Amino acid sequence: MCISDSGIGIILCLGNPGLKYALTWHNAGFWVADILAREAGVSFKRAGAFEIAYLPGGIHLVKPSVYMNESGRSAGAILTAKQVPPENMLVVCDDVNIPLGSLRLRKNGSSGGQNGLKNVIDVLKTQEFPRLRIGIGPKPEKMDLAKFVLKKVPKANQELASVVAHRAADCVLESVNNGVEAAQAIYNGQI
Image (cartoon, rainbow, N blue to C red; front, top):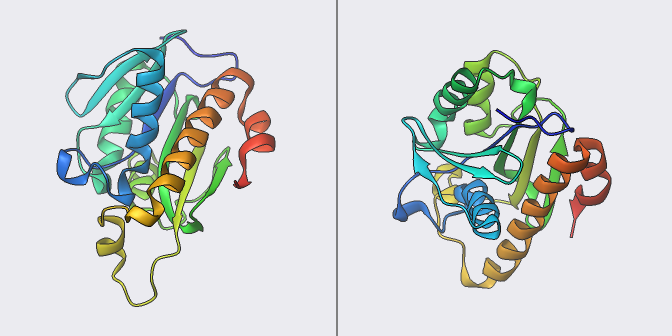
């Protein structure tokens, strides 16, 4: 298992498996994983509770093969399999509390109400791991949260969603290559 100089060896990108969910807001983490894999010319292989690809330098790129609310199972499985502590894993996910077009990278902290991230924290029994949250908000006032995050991205937002996903992929690479603090200085905030 290779750990970069920044300390990151695993990139865990959250989403829901299956074509039904591919273009939904909740799959923003998977969009980033797919961009990183495509740009590196690698593909994912199924490995139990997750799919894995290997980025240059031996960095593990992981997508859970379980639903968002069970993401902790995949996080625990990959950390156990590779015998690395949580602080060496960067988690990438959507966040309805952050405006569309914004990224928020942190070294640690709470789930911010994101259920996949909450499950990872619950299973690992720690908040001490970096996370990149991709803004998909705000949710329309009267719409149910679950309905919103599982809704396909409207045509009017697809271009911005794509730009943000590519920016998030760049942020992940900056975090791996130069550390979370360096990436925060460049990528945190609105595009």
